[in-house]
Amino acid sequence: MIRQRFRGLRAALLTAVAAFWLAPAGAQELPRTSDGHPDIQGIWVNFDRTPLEVPTDEDPGRIEALRLWFPGLEVTPEGLRGLTGPNPGGLASFLGEGDGEGHSSKRSALRRSLVVDPPSGRVPVRAEAERQKQQNLVHLTDSYTYHTPWERCITRGVPGGMFPAGYNNSYRILQTADYVVILYEMIHEPRIIPLGDGAHLDASIRLWNGDSRGRWEGDTLVVEVANYRAEQVGTIATSITSTATLKAIPQSAGMRAVERFTPVEPGRMRYDVTIEDPEVYSAPWTVSMPLHRDDEYDMYEYACHEGNYGLANSLSGARAKGE
Image (cartoon, rainbow, N blue to C red; front, side, top):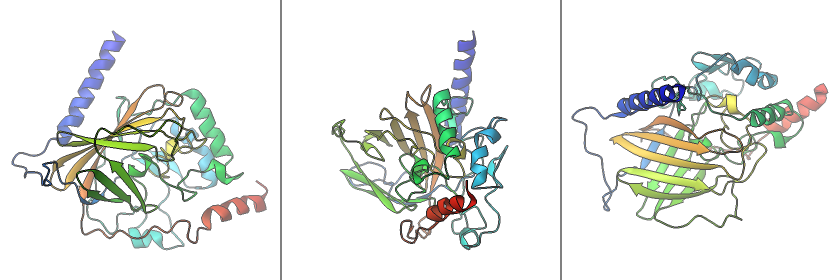
């Protein structure tokens, strides 16, 4: 009986999500390339304050170790808050007081959570993975190895780089018959996705962002990602805003992701991704969120390694305090 109710709740939730994405009556035809597929080229943004997970009473404890780095951090019914105070570097005032939306008018409506499956809106993290995550957070001041690859200026990951951050939430998409390229504004890294029925790289080759292979299913671009590296601190949660409750979560070599880019109408696209990693999560989980095209958005160079003093200063400061 419980299982039947759960299935009914899941079906109702997915129906509601599908209804949210229905294009309005009289919507314009999608622009298409010469080979008939939707033309998804251009600059897309995802300025979105929706939390990754539905907040619960457990979350303050899950981020307690982060307060050493962000003393004002707190979880509210609207998600993570506490990063919008004065910014001595001037970044907040330049990008749009603390939320990074200053130079884009395309913003997403606040929703319950980015996670749409399981119906609870919570990521099904295994207890051992949660313990390892907490250990990583406790040791943040000990070594750079406990920090996310974003803080180390390596990558925000796949699909982590698609999740909303506090700023620089844009992507330039280029498209040919054989490839789709996504240029991420944050860490300015290009992701090249071969299209077709080509096989993944040999299993012995492991990459930070995995190995992507794409194909068209109707008007949806489906991208399967495999061959991830096993990492003590993975690439799923590299944002300190939307994904902070998963910050420092590990990942195994068995992690896989399936992304779906579905144009809904001109200028609006749905991004869905299902993530599975049996060593870290007890079941697959799915995120769904909108992307908005904004060709007036200015993509700035995200200089990270260049002049990066934040991580070194944080670690040396902890040494000076004897922590």
